[in-house]
Image (cartoon, rainbow, N blue to C red):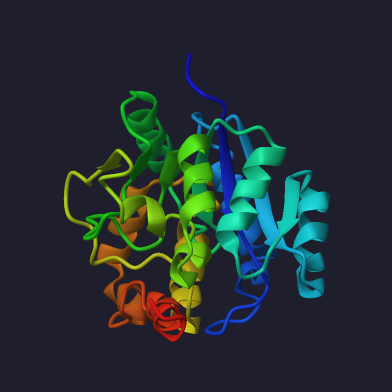
Length: 258
């Protein structure tokens, strides 16, 4: 029997690069709402919840979840690993799918593909983005891990980067955890589909306006075909370094003596 699979989408208002990005609207719909809508098309998920912080600013996220009828968990702002563990515990997840709210273009079929790899058994952690390098676009990130692995990371991880980025401790310790990466059939890493900067938002907005009206469950192939046909849109966020935000977390490790 497959485990109960719970997708936990982390979301918060605070963002040093693009504040309030998850509630920015495209044709009246917030990015987080679009993310939730597309995730709901995935067949391999038993439940989808949003994990936000207990900061006052994130009351807006809790209100949106209430309006949409989506379960919302509130926890630590900085210790995101603790937030995930507490959320998974409360919702009795046996397997956790980690998604982030700044990836509203996520293809539900990609979610199902990675979940299916995990359900085959034999792994504690399965991802299409880590260990690096990834052959998938930035913004098509899916990570699946067992509750037992999450609990081990929660108990053992001490570096600030491990607490902030949830799964660092898992995929950086392949001798402790059974880790598996799912590669794309063709290298699509040239495409940037996440939202960290204004240029990212403009690209994502263009994609939604072109594809969403006719098919809300548009695929990764639809996205890349549109961008290939519209190089002016594809170039909007070229040159932005993937995972640039990790550097700040590593600097916290250094300051903490790691």
